[in-house]
Image 1 (cartoon, rainbow, N blue to C red):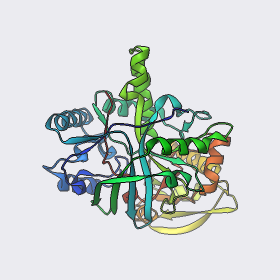
Image 2 (image 1 turned 90 degrees about the vertical axis):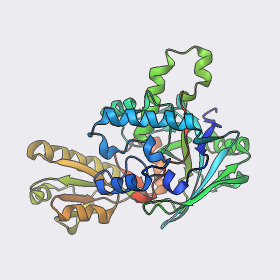
Image 3 (image 1 turned 120 degrees about the vertical axis):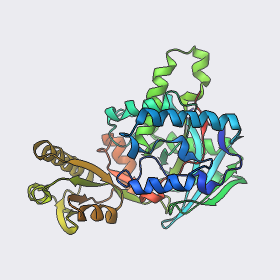
Image 4 (image 1 turned 180 degrees about the horizontal axis):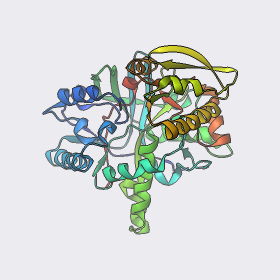
Length: 391
């Protein structure tokens, strides 16, 4: 296998990590106050906030925002904001209320990844990719000189063999994170070759060589793949072999990590008649979900096969909105969802998928329904710290 590569990782040379590192762009998409506070905290300082486009702003002067992001990337490169880390991976330890989650920052070959349902590549998407969400992200990426990953890949390692192989070197950064993000430490991994072989050993005994499943950042990785496909036809064979856009920076985390909580992504239905929505919701099943209407919560029957239940729920929501109007949002926290429904609307609080079922479900059935699961609460998501050249 040649799926994993050792990237040249860019880190801030002297910036304060607490104001440099910011949460994933697809978090708090209904909470403008969150991102306004991030903007206030980072104002006038070198920060990853200036290098990303939070999705809450995707309908707000997007062209100008993208131009500012690209200009900031060029400026940071010109000013020497970054230092380069070469020859190894980075061991990331992230402490939140859920415990300490351990990951490895590395790069993957996009030729070994597919977001098509049923693909048998070593790296696979886990949820349905919404194709219309890719073009706006391509616009953000296509002229960018850098990528900053919030992509988290999962690997199936119940014996913890990969992390047991790691040899830890110098600490590269250690800091508290803003906005309740906990604490993060990054250390240089000195034996990237041995760690890579430990990863490959996980897939050797699998008929389909399934190595990594996309846990977070599904559409970001799909965008990277699309941009690479758009570019590689203009390159020579020699250029294609080493072009930096071919390789995507990610963090790989063992699915059995004790601090990695699999959380369902709940459905918020913004409707003027939540009682009508609730009255028509009849999914059945011998499992349980919860329904919140105007802040009042009750249990409802739900299929025990959670992916099948989510497909049925999403079909009902789409049909309801087509007939009655409204809008759907995807909320990561149960209490956050309930609070949103207090002001009006309905929410469905979904049950989680078990870790031990996850890889088998993907191998057997391909992608899960869109927005089936999330890993932890919004403030536990991957913060942007590392960057990599893509041109």
